Image (spheres, rainbow, N blue to C red):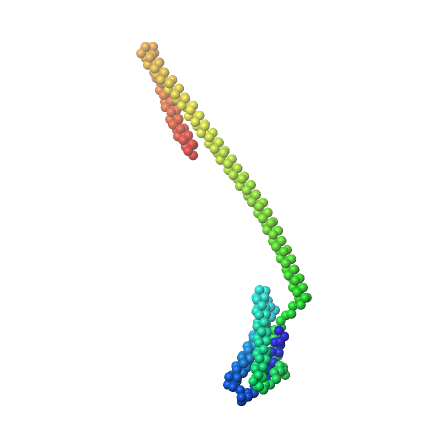
Length: 283
């Protein structure tokens, strides 16, 4: 938008060169129409001046922010887009002003109103306002951007590939670690089962030992009870027949008493072992 380079001084000159000589024959409506058109032009010129000044401030701040790295790439892109949009609007407004001036001149001429020639003369010594210039995209610019895009894509592809390879390596390491943990878990379960089996086996053996011990003692008790009863019967028969002396009877009764005590003791031992067996089975 090179048109904005001298827009401020030019507009100032135009504003003061816009001279109108009203004919006495002009109607009130025509005079009002001319006045309205001139006022509309001046308003748009003021808007254009304000827009150019505002745009310069935006560009100046953006340049400072970029030089001091105080703005992200996303913000730079956003603000550059805003600048381009403002440039487009100002360009449109500038064209509108020129068209309005041409329309006003034609309108005045149609009413035979004398008008001064409109010349866009740059005032000497007037400060020139730096205005935004739209970038013209050349083939070299396009090629450069394409090369930058290609380089960025290649870099991105490399980063993606490196990330995928790193992920695969990490996944493989985790898989191996999981295998080791699974093996360790299986080993621990096997050892636990072995211990449990060993305990169970020892327990079964202990139960069997107690059961066998009880069975033997019970057999001994039964046999002892039977033998004791037989001896008592024989002693009673011998007493009736008078075949034994008092000394023999006393000796045999002492033996019977001792056997009976032993059998009673054995019976108590069987009871204790049965209680032990019940505890082993319920443990």
